[in-house]
Image 1 (cartoon, rainbow, N blue to C red):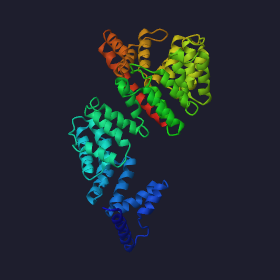
Image 2 (cartoon, rainbow, N blue to C red):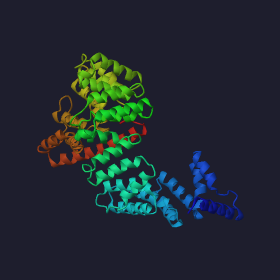
Image 3 (tube, one colour):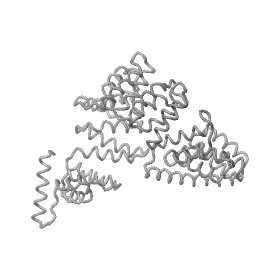
Image 4 (spheres, rainbow, N blue to C red):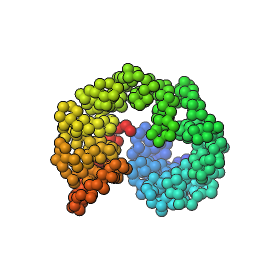
Length: 455
């Protein structure tokens, strides 16, 4: 249905309502203005009235409103109504709703795929991304034969981002090696609009040096930065990529150059610069490292506070200073969960003069609840050894189980050791400890998200 036809139908509905004596006539333009002004509930009243009279645009916008409020079943009904009314956009919208709630359920994924395929058949090439993501999540789904041409259709109308989508399509089909030259060409063309092409190309260049050099990508980023066409966060992510733990050939020099490029505007870069200097002395001496961290702290960087505390805790680059370490780690702890781990270790080992078991357990728990499997391992050892704290095999088992489930290998070994020397009753109680702690972890994650916690 054309926009002109929709507007005509909207006017007809308004006329019908007026003749029927309705004082508050529903109006699409009024509803859109209310939505743009932030009065979503007021807009929804108009959309609902028009939707009941079969206006497809109103049905879709009402469904979108309901999705945002978590009323998915009601939204589904209005998307279906819009499909019946002839608005082709509804097929993709309903597919996205199903995809969002598939959560491992193949039948829901199949319903989403049917929606996307129908949308594609009706000319909606925006669903290509959705189909590809769906196939990646559910490899057993039958492939839509038109996905490749759908992506090419987007490319032909000048969508630069679709070049990266075609790259992912090649990868999905196991064609990365055979198509590597095409992939390089496509990603080079999409670099200015798709960040993910940077690490993808760098990885290809490391494996196939004849295709290019990672340093070329660094220079491309620097040129875009000078032209004010690059987000600092993208340079920061790429700097981290060059030193990621899974890299076989880390390149801290390139990482440092990217970080220095953005550190005036992006305080997080300063703490990563300091960490690079700490691990690679050739990149900067201790005085330079401390100067960088001071700049970070002055700009309010919690990560710089954490790094400063860690340096005073380790005592390798500067003289160990437990009080300074405690001060900076506490300052960082609201935003940097790992600070709690080191605080727990300090209090457990008595770095401040004498051990403080209560504070040690408190900070280990805070670290564990915010993702540190190693903190739960340390708690398990703490209760197992019983040094400075009462020995408790129930807690030792429960925390070892949590750490093991999170993938910490030493905890798995420890769990087997503990299991061999305790009764079945203690195992059951330990499992209860682990379950209670999982609930506390979930609460902690929700609170951190609500407070805008950083990764």
